[in-house]
Length: 404
Image (cartoon, helix red, strand yellow):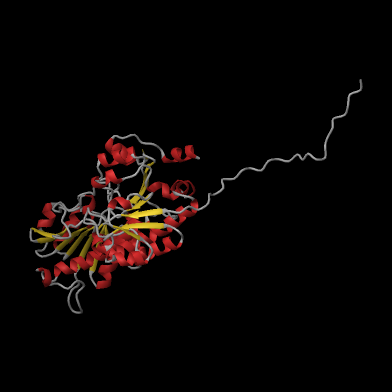
């Protein structure tokens, strides 16, 4: 029997299959809740009425607790006109899938949390409690912290804005306590022609230090900056655009300068832990009577040995006749400006999240948001917190990849 030829039909086509791409999902409608803050002397609000107007006009739903914007001088009317729903009870706000807070989650709010909620808030690493974290893990919460959120350039935009506000505010605060109005020495910050300028010592050349330097120099003060990082000192000089007295933190030089200064500012940043104590009690005791210390780093323990936390209601105390201002969270005292700065970062992030199809997709496509996530679906993804509380750490990148 002769072998028959293979039959090839012209109706068949032989083509290589295309590679399937990761197609972005359709946008989703977000349900955003903004509760009224009751802790941490918090006056800020994370989204302004202007931001809410943009979100609502993009088809999203916003529920805000009555009175939530009062600390930043925003009325309920401002928010309802922007399209937000005003809720009389916290419970209604916590029904939303996304919560946006300007203070960390506190114990009173734990029972109100819904499983699988997404929370954007600060975390205040120094005051966070294990029970709060465990309860959030139990409820499979995903949480993003303001402090660690990075932008496309690898900077922390909210921390940067808050540091700029704190730095600008320092000289206004110091001026207040040097004037007679608050029983100060009666010195005008900066001085005038024919009178030697006010002497300002700044310890720390980060963003707070740089902004304080700018403000003090604009007022006409004589500024001396100390930091142990030569890179930061160089950057400060380049950014300010003029030569400033700079020095590494050498106790002999620092002590000599503190003796004759009118204002001393603690602006050292803490890398994950407590701020280093660089000014001893003895150095403070030799300072001029009536001089002012503003310890901005009190949020992380402070860098003056004589500092202890004060409140907005009672902001100063005297030790060795030196006025100490040690209020943590200085930006909350300038709540409207601070709220606008936070809102400018979060509103575009929300719109992007909606376009990407929710926060899980946002974290997948936008790599730099990953640095801000410390809980993902109940798994702890922040190494520092897992070490501190001896809780199980899970790598966020592995978690996200396993869900695709």
